[in-house]
Length: 282
Image (cartoon, rainbow, N blue to C red; front, side, top):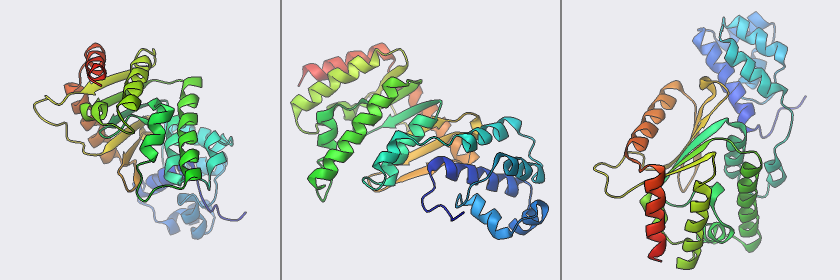
């Protein structure tokens, strides 16, 4: 079977977790390949997600590494056995892979939290607001790319509402005041956000300007909870790139950051009151 040219986020995560197992056992790729009776190149390809791994090979891999974490092994097996393609695959080749992986991470997590500083969470954006956000890219996107990215964002929004899961948005006050496309578009967006905040599975909390100390995260973050804690993922987004973090030390650090953000955020009622107040000024 030829190597995968473009492994998905979840396929890469399986490879990463297998590499972590090997390293935790203190085994080199050569040691593990001898234990499994396969070529060391195949071990490297499995860990890089260039080739797939069967459930049987997964369990042999775990046994050779003396991994006794059955919940993690079961969760990895579930990922391997899930051969379904996400709706976002229809857009592959039309928009950047990093944007596709936003949808994949949201869809495959059991719950997620966001911290945003510049614009509304993607899955809460109205059509006009999303088009205005993409419309500010420099150099400007060609019209067909602008329309494709906007349509993709609207499909992400619709998919989450078809198959909802717990989600919490921590929104810095600047987001509520920053205008993409003008006051009318922002006012419509704030009204939509207020509607979303009433959904039983969605929590919207605002971090106001007048807190004593800024919470510390200066980039937009997503914390996605996996089937088991070892499969949690942090997505760190900047204007230039998106980075996925899964080291235990990174996950622990970002959970602390989210705890600190939560400690200074307004409660849901106070957040709605502030959103209403800002909307009335537009």
